Image (cartoon, rainbow, N blue to C red; front, top):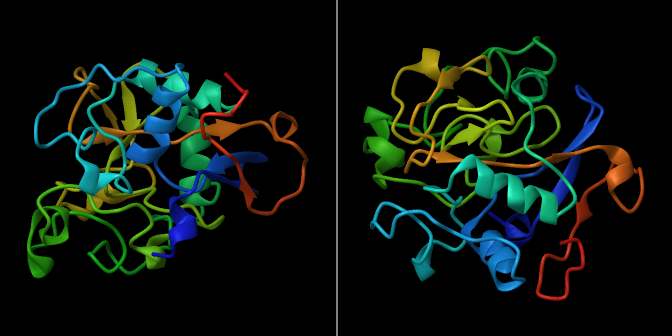
Length: 219
């Protein structure tokens, strides 16, 4: 993936009339929030958790609770999406089975999953991959990894969507995939953010990069 996909950026979602972060929030992006004194990571230091591993800065943050995701999203001027908002973008308002269309079925050409033809879990990595590593699987608005890599938190309690790197069944990697997870602080779970158009600096429908460095004043 090009380096710019690792920067926090917002993409306009025509199916929802909102903006989503292009990718699941990465470890490096979350560390910016921690360094700004806003976010706190209370997850495990297990080797399966990406936070604290300098080689996984461009991987999505896992092992964080939805409340920690909500804190990050608020810092960048957004919030966690509702399950319905998430589904509307992932399915192009119910017109697609998968974010990329009705076919082909999921494989490691399209998403980070447990694909026996590509080495198994995490497309042979046994865990997450860097965000936006499967551009063929992008959604209608160009969002990365809406299925696969990590299940994604929503604003509705323990409801997560999208499937993760350990999922092998294509039926569990559809835009409609939803799960009520009683243990949301999981190695399989991450998040992305959404915001209303008037939350940004302008209301254009292009790619809007945000500076999430220490001088960010959105906290």
